Structures are given as C-alpha cells and as structure tokens.
Length: 225
Image (cartoon, rainbow, N blue to C red; front, side):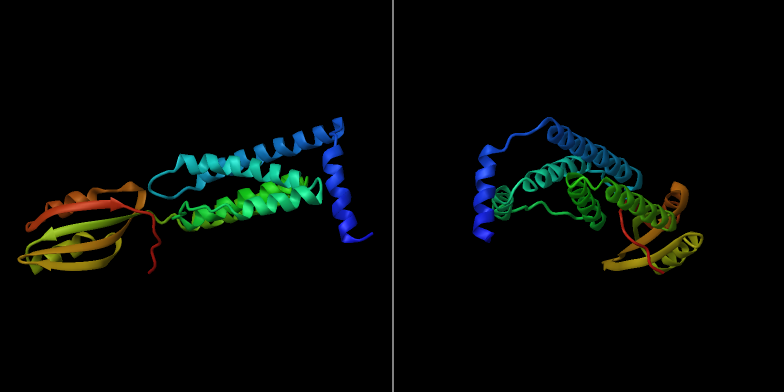
C-alpha cells in the first residue's frame, strides 16, 4: 500500500469515525490524568517559586497547557489527516508572551511534555519524569537557600561614612555593585544576602552620621562569590 493510499484511507476514516464507549473512556481518563498532572505541576510551582512577584495567571496556565497538550495528542493520534491539519494550524500561530524567568520555561516545557505523555497514555513515564523533576528542584532549592537577595542603595556625604557603612555590613554577605558621585553626595549600590529576613542592618545604616537615606529592594537573582 502506497503513502497516497494510506492518506486516502485515513481521510475517509475521518468522516466515518465513530467513538466507541471504550475509546471515550480512554480519552476521558487521559484528560483527567493530564488535569491531575497539571495540578501537581501547579502545586510544585507554588512551592518552589523564588521570584519577587508571583504570577498566578502563569501558574494556572501550566494546568491548562497540560490538558490542552493532551487533547492535541489525542486528536493527532486518530489519523494522519487530523495530525497534518493540526500541525499546519499550529505552525501559523505566533506567541509573543515574553518569559522573563528561565525557570518558568522549565515548568512550561514540563507541562507540555507531561500533556503529550498523558495524551499518549504513557502515565508511568509522566509519573517518573515528575518524580525526577521534583527531586531536582528540591535538591537545588535547598542549596540556594542562603538568604533573600536585596539591592541596597545608600546616599552619603564623605568617604569616612563609607568606612562606617562597610563596618556596619561586616556581618552580612554583600558586594558593591556600583558607586556614583553626584556633587558632594555619593550613591552606593550593594547586593546583600539577608538571612532569615533580618533587616536590622537598614536601621543601622540609617543611624550612621552622614547617611542621607537607605533603600532596600528585594529581587530574584543569583549570588556568586
């Protein structure tokens, strides 16, 4: 049988295709499994999220992405005609939503691949991959718990004040990011690792003679050194 005959038969079957009770149950189980896997990914995303502003819409998208990918996999597995039409339809879609956090891409691809596995009814593979991914996130999350990172901006007058600032920050892990001179005022930006949300250093910096103001901004980054 040639390729043309296969496509022709698949095209004809697409019009005569009737869903049996067993096939409907199988599809329902696949979609339900995709929903459960998506909810698990959603909960893991909530647990290990380390950013500054939590994006709830993205977290919900992970659930929908898992279910929708499973649906697409179920659709294209019926016959060649639907699979070719689905590929053509998806190829013209352009997604312009920017993903700023690299780990969000990990969760997004995790949801997509889990949906494919659920749609292909490879539940064991989806469970094994989920367990491995959770262990990886758990291990690296524990290693990265060295404290919250803050950008601290201090405005002060003279160099003697700079020495006092360094002494006040001696018990914290920090590094100077920038130093800007504006007339008689100096602006110094520091990256500070703050353990256990201990923000008392802000008051100590503010109490130093010569310090005009102190600004502490939390951000999601990596500390090296």
